[in-house]
Image 1 (tube, rainbow, N blue to C red):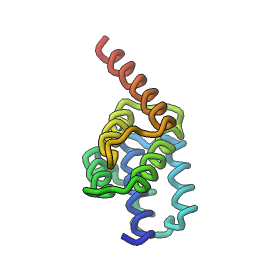
Image 2: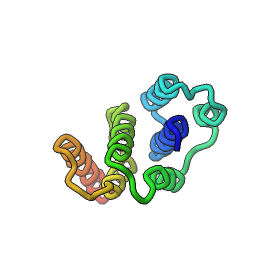
Image 3: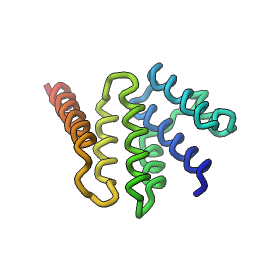
Image 4: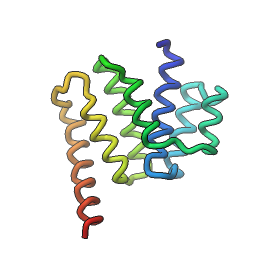
Amino acid sequence: MDNHSKIKALFKILIGVAWIDGIIQPEERVYLHRMAKNKEIAQDPEIKSLLTEVKQVSSQECYDLLESYLGNNPTDEDYEELFNAIGALIYSDGVVDTEEAKLLHRLQLLDPANKHLPWGLDKVLKEIQKLYRLAIKEKTI
């Protein structure tokens, strides 16, 4: 996959992640538009269409894109780039929704070597897991 195609594929995943909680938050919208402009894909017809937010991306589509992007043998570099991009988008609005926490957990399971994550990522994941457990607990009360 060439670099332009890789950037577009990553962007499509991020659009799906932004929709995962059912609505694109204003901060997520700003992040996505800025990224599209910085990566010089904002004028691509397919990307323009996604940025209009006319069609919502389903959770299943998002997960399919995610698994397709990583493939069967993702490199550590591809995985970390994806994880960092998703994390930055999710944290752009300062709130980690339950669906976003589930996505991050699933992404962790796709770690290419299932090796222990660097301490920084591990710390972030532990915080997300705490928020997720709290959200689940609140929903069951």
